[in-house]
Image (tube, rainbow, N blue to C red; front, side, top):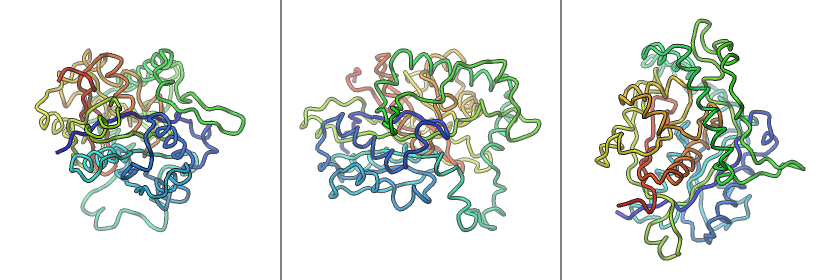
Length: 386
């Protein structure tokens, strides 16, 4: 097995639905970050063996292999192939796994993992409403599937989370994101996008949280529920990309990686509860590496809904203090947004930033996915004691 390293990553700003990036075609948005990644790393793009991209709404402007289309739109070498994958919200995290697996096996030397979603232009659920339902009668007879919002409500109910528990997490998400932005963390991650005469260079969903206003919001998915717009991930436009290669190739090119991939796992769980698989995926990733939660210096878990993250915390018996010190310390999707196919790569960029900021060694990324699945990726900061 070959050592797999992540050389660098770059992302677009996270644009609010109908906001600064709404006028940008998904192909061009992903092309922008691919070009920025090539420029930032100085890699010869012709040496890339494959470009693997995540996208969930693969219809209309995001259909017909949006990743290949973006690579070509960026003016990058036609000799480099590309493919688009769909593991729902974990699509670009899965792209990282596929790229790393290709490198570890020796089939790739250099690969790019990326993802994109323009939720302004391709509304959530567009693929599921095109020419019939993806849920057959046989599937529905086997599993009484519900919406993700209803799953989030059921998780809150099962684990006993109150409305105030969820609201407090939303407040924290925005406050930590504001602190990271003010510290210049996001400026180092973002490749600003020129849209007409406007330069979009800031994440648009972050705002100073008003606890009283958050507490006044009506539930979204149940009349008597606890999940609101504030405690759900924001609908967002965005893209992100990462350059991976073998450790040997990085040394040959004189490149200093940012992280080493330690372990990659997947898990499936109840497709009706749907959003609970990050806990078993995390356990598998840690077990495979011979580590425990306390060995982690940082965790990025996608804030699809506040209840999802709290259930993961409680299932792994993580204390509130440890959580506050190690998990989503630069904010999460309730503040930054969740551009579906682009979120996995964005979370990995954030994870590397936190490890570098703290001088930490091990970091974990995990996220829930439609259908009751989750990815978990364990990395080690490059230069950490090994």
